[in-house]
Image (cartoon, rainbow, N blue to C red; front, side, top):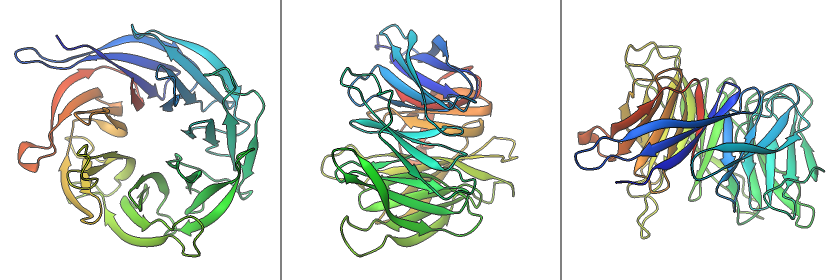
Length: 353
């Protein structure tokens, strides 16, 4: 019998949910059940794990107190809140967890806050090391993928159609500043970001496009160069469809970082009776759309591959709950096959523990 996997679910409710997934075996179907829920406050919509404590996760809350919480999960899938701190901003919905810090991008106020880990892991320091101010107008930020080798992070500024790269300027205090800003087309709505090889892929929410850039090396005078923009919708999509989430399924072959690698883009607000679509792309050097699937969900704002890339968990905020698919990566085989599902309200993000 397969050992159950624990999956943590962020949501637009007041709780973090913990699921147990038992993979299918020959002659026996897979299963997905709710193990527990931890009430933490309004909309723990994005979650991420501690860099060294695999059973500790962080969530930023979109509440009036502007908080970041940490939750510890045991082997049975039971969770317990262990810490709660203010993020000193408005709607702290996005953040990045690094080797020694949590960097919070406050969604509606104009700042990025760095909170370092305390010496007694997995606690966070109650005093804050550095706040990076942005322009004073109302802006919105997205998640912060990191170039860990050079102490950089990137954030997309949804309000002014700009992407900023932040770089550590003092290794002792981890102060940060702007390295460069990359403008995108007005109204496109830059949102989620991923970095693969020397390329940056950015999801434009409003225009439903996948943007691509070559990342400039650290210390060079060369700026980040925009490349191709590819629409993420198809002729089957309704006119008001928006892009919503971006994930990458890396090739696990140690001899290749591109062959077999796929980038997935989910959508919302599509009036197609089969629900919202997930578009499938290959990265550079052959950057193009190669497929599309409709998993029977409405408003897909959360997707995450298992660490081995075998399974993809997907959630529908408006309808469909949570589904797990076995990924085959082949067009002729439909790309993926559903193996388990569960009824979870408004799922928005996932972590495989």
